Length: 340
Image (cartoon, rainbow, N blue to C red; front, side, top):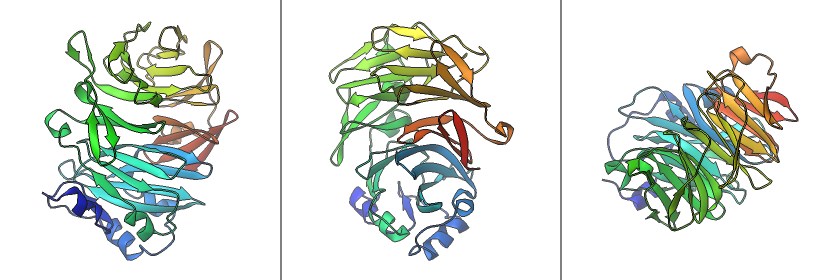
């Protein structure tokens, strides 16, 4: 098996996260031929790709993690940085990439379901080659024996990833610190999302309908006014958290007290939640709703039937939406389609 140092030293278009044969798409070879160029357009970047998650660490900058094709035995991925309508990108293979996060200092991380984390610099590179040269891979051998991970987040100065059977890890330099496993009443749970300020203060939500706070040493289950499956959590600028999930579930509060926002439709499952300032938006498959006081209001989105909605992320210039081949920006209650 290839070592982390050998993987980190690869400057070809495609990093193979695990040493096994892989077949690069035509797009990858084209991108490698053009690696000294300053970027590629939207149509070329999104060709054959499905956006899993995205983030905007600075105004005018978008970073996305995408799967490519549908070969689940040999997953391929595309990670891109968009500035001024052009993309810099690199490829990953042999492990599905599910999550991405980035900080305004230029650091960014993508998470593979089997625990591999790839760090790269989004701020300095101006060409494809420069971007690819910043990549470094951190494998996490423990994950393969336990089950897939789901989410990576930069919490203050800490990089935390988490997923199935309550796994949670903190990336410390070039190694992973295993955090205590989250279980509820002795049962395994699947962590879907995390939010907080550091490894010593964050909340995890689970698909099993639970949430728990981690204080750096131990987990404490939260008393939530719901038992529906939960999908997403975010912090709000006023110090509160917002949680979204199945059956129209939206909760706003802190570790001790939560308010239930009455659902617009109990058949509506929310997959994403994000805040810009104190404004909170939640996404379902057909659109986006906004929390207004103690109510939900549907956001009018022109042409919504031709768009996709899933992941929401707060950014410096609004709330961003990432799903399939759609990227949109919500600002001042107005939707702007960036790419579709």
